[in-house]
Image (cartoon, rainbow, N blue to C red; front, side):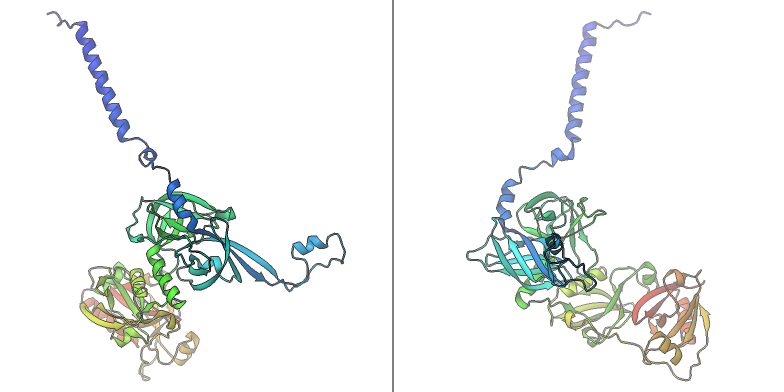
Length: 487
């Protein structure tokens, strides 16, 4: 049987169709996978920069620094080296001036200027240089070291160009932003990037930083971070860098934090944050299990000193799950929410206590007035209990004696069990317990004797608990620790 014949024209036609098809596929692939930079291409930022740049300022601070008190070089009067040593600080004990540079921005036509607290801290003189070259001296209206924000004021003959704050909560990861300021003392500069992360915490209680890859360097501190509408959504504050220069990880304090601080500084010259009056810690899985909780959401109260919370009936061991009608996810969220609440306001606080929810009405105090509050302590044990060293849960425990109280620096009004030794192979050691700690509660009940602690252990086992919740104090500071119970 002969093979079927195929015409040459047919082959050419099929080949042409295949080439057209391949070309179409390649075009589609190119369109779908072209570089991100091409997709993200924006029109020139020049018009926006021209609009908002007059509100950005350079800040120069001057501080008088005393001379060292040690031996100084002596240069004979009239020596050719006299001017050399005077210029370099070799002219005796007379003070000298030290200068520093930073950035800021104007937020009102009457001359209010925002910057970082660390830019102007300790300064004797603050000079503001505007975009057009004009210079004015500034006075400090107020500062807040907790958020590293400072509010300054200048007196100008005419209304000043200014910018407004935007809503930082609506900024999304991937949004374009512009940073402006005075990097490395080089003068006015603009850099662009995106929001690379949100809600960053560095070290402060009220931290809420926007992370950006827009270039931020030394000297940019206090400058604004703008969105594409020309609104300030952050104050450039810090960078993460091994060499002191920008590597694309910069942090700007979110504008919604800054505006609350600025409003208080403008009105009172200081901050006035709400104060609940509790010590708290985050819940972990083992803590939640030991308390019979299904979730780690909330803030666990470790101590309730004299203050608003105690007056409202809050107790150590309560778990705060709602504040002023909003759910509490963790301690950081609660601290920020309380701090942002008005002093004197009465709020509803929902707590979990022994598996049941309770609503407490707390009238908030002022945190700044309560920084030195002394924590509450438990009652003293009965004198008839004899101190006997006992090993439990990887701990060597004994009742508190006068000698131990003096050694540990605790008062006679605290009851509990002193930890005299910890087995280094135990879970207790792994979770940070050490000799010198004092256990004041077990299973959310006070303990003053080893027998009472044993009762708590047995009760937890009978209830089917896998761990026992302990309240441990070290140098007066309390924290909860959950230790596993043997089967």
